[in-house]
Amino acid sequence: MSEIKVNNIQSFEGTHGPEISGTVEMNSTGAMSLPRGDTTYRGGRGRGLFYGGNSGPINKTIDSITISTLGNAVDFGDALDGDPLMGSCASAIRGFFTGGYFSVSNNIDYVTISSTGNGLDFGDCTVSTGRRTGCNNASRGIFMAGGIEPATQFDTIEYFTMASTGNTSDFGNLTLARDRTGGSSSATRGLCYGGYTYSPAGHQNLIDYITISSTGDAQDFGDLTSAKSAGFATGNSTRGLHATHFANPTNYNTIEYVTYSSLGDAIDFGDTVATGRYGGGNSNATRSVLATGMNPSNTNNICFVEISTLGNASDFGDLTAARNGFGTASDTNGGLG
Image 1 (cartoon, one colour):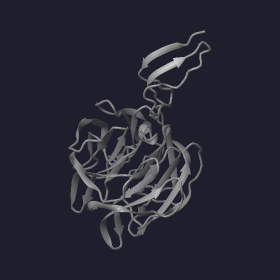
Image 2 (cartoon, one colour):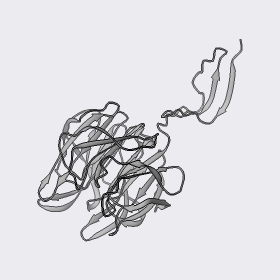
Image 3 (cartoon, one colour):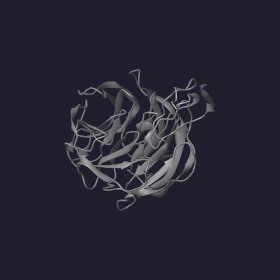
Image 4 (tube, one colour):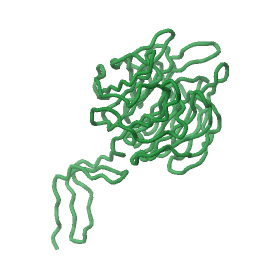
């Protein structure tokens, strides 16, 4: 029997799954051959989450946005812990959050990004600390750095398999113990940006990197444009962005970027719509959505940039409540879109 050709299929997307486009051929038995057009895998469905944070008291709200569509965030559920300044990372299916400022715990919370609902217990980190950061590839999550005022800081890097609930394992160490860092990743490299050290007291400009699939100590990648802490990082599989920061006594609105495949210093990208610190970002393959945090009061600002095009951010919408120190997770960047 002859084949049935279904032309110009723009997309096919399962519950969590891949999107394909192009021309699909189906024979009389119902078997589908690979598309002859665009076969790029785009993990996830483009949802970004802002998890918990600080709005005076702890705010356990989880906000949700669709990264490709401008508009205000909507309620997703409630965080299990929700303590501000949590480290976070994501797969194409789950978002993960640990640490915090007030509770200084080793708990790992998680959510299933495609399904609205509350945070659940995943397991424990090897250390109890706050002010962490995270990164990931498609299957492995990383938490690193951290601090407990007034004197304890960590250079710890730990990892876990995101598909299976459980505890973290030791990965290696950063080049310098510090907290208030930012983290982002490509499919192969994870980066830790800037931060603050207690002794000697000071903001840092260093960028560390790891190869996520191989345990071991971090190495020097390059430097940020200046010494800074309390910023955040996001990006796509090619380019990492570091946005906003604090350098006592001032909050800043700068955005800078690196190309993951090439060691070197960060380069100016543009500015966010407002100055801030303790914000967070979510990305898909082309767009980063940036919430600026506090300035010096809490804000609900969300803005965005197109990752491939240098320039200033534009308004995206608002969080459901003004706050800072939220964790972030997106299924597209978790799927390394």
